[in-house]
Image (cartoon, rainbow, N blue to C red; front, side):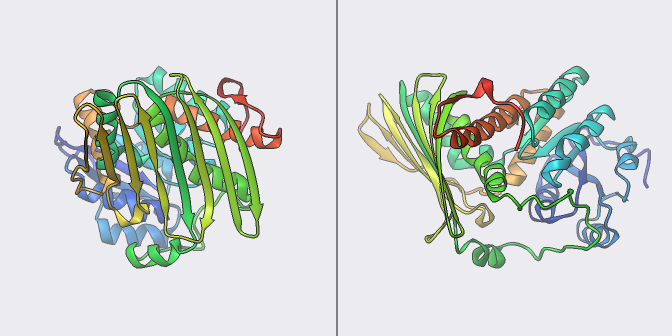
Length: 362
């Protein structure tokens, strides 16, 4: 391990926990491309994976023991990209060690553990950001500015996240070669054993986060669910605290291309957004209709590397002491509440569930 390295004050030195699929495809590449990030260290219990990633990305240090990496004085922040069940325990260790944390979504697997983590980060004065990378989609960022500046009072939000039966054919073509190992650390049991839990956590978290990003806090949800063969589908009505209403469609998987996006209706305009499979690294195509000028336009958005953009935003907040531009711990908790409320609503016959009443986990 290298020690006493002179730090560049313009760079955030990060340690990446996990050399599995999400870190290989997103965070290690993002760290290597980010203009204000230095990859100080990587950590994984698998010698095979750790050595392969070290050969590709050349971090200053490598660790098989997470606690040892957290003692590295040259690390400012930790990026955690491992199994959902490990998110909160490992984030707590990092915060107690004085490190800022970028934590992959979902924030955790229960409301209570997420609240405990949020309170700990606040107590220590450290940034805890949840990895909802779509907030760094250049097209969606433009759409949000247009909504806030041009659309007046918002009445309606429609969002959809429909995985495709052709997803893995596409991702096999565009993703880097991904490595696995029999020595990878895995959570107890099989996370995919209950698929409605698994899909809600993995896919529903994106759907709710985009709604939250545009519309602000969600007050209540009412959900219906149907499962036929390998297809799982939720239709979720929601009330926003702003007074707007919404409907969300989560389906895995449809016989069509990847189908994701949203529509937003306001008294001063309308937004239509088409989002692509994230591994294509294409910014969302947004059409904005401005009622005041009776014009419709689509902004150019060329930079689709939202994982790099997310890391740059995370680093900027820490280096410059500016507010978090991504999903905060509060956002992560509200998304968990929305997921749990959705599950409860289905179990109780599409009953309306207030998010404040959502307890427990998935």
